[in-house]
Image (cartoon, rainbow, N blue to C red; front, side):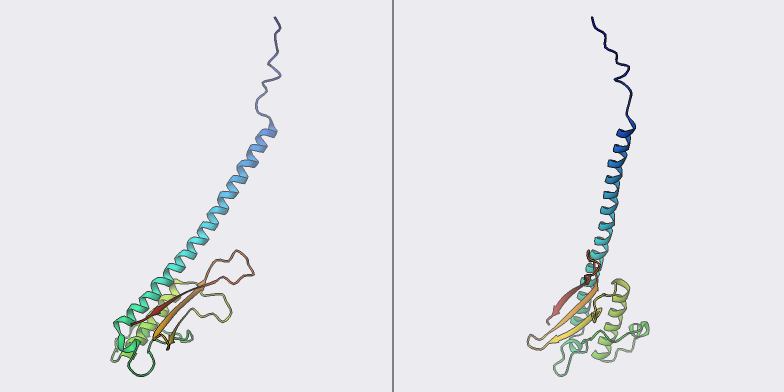
Amino acid sequence: MVRLSTRGAVRGVSLIEVMVAILVFSIGMLGLALLQMKGAKFTRESASRTSAIILARSLAESMRANPAGALPTSGDSAYLYTGDTKYTQAQCDTTALTSPQAIAARDLACWQIALNKAIPTPTGAGTKLATVTKDASLGTLTITVSWAGVADDPTADATESYSFSYLQ
């Protein structure tokens, strides 16, 4: 009978095997960290998009509550907004609402302040945070909200926008 020596065969785990296991584990953990960072970035993007949609529709509901200011029988809508006017909290808090135009000015002030708090400023050149324009051919007001979105390419413009047409 031949006896085989097992003493040389059973030495335990070699240092190289441990280092390879640590390397594989480290690559996996880096992948999970990258996944977590991308997930957080896309969650912020989703929150901005949701806020933009809610605030655009909120202004449309304010227009619906003030039809004389939104789509008057004569003249332009009091809700037209180029994005250049900067409103103050005092304009939002006003209680002097004696006309549909005053109500519209208060609505726009509160809307712009809410936009500034909820949505990151767009990064595109010349892009406004929000506008309200009139399409005379359709008889609608178009509410457009823009924000700084996610761009995987650092040289790309990350500005996103949402438009909502209000037709009474």
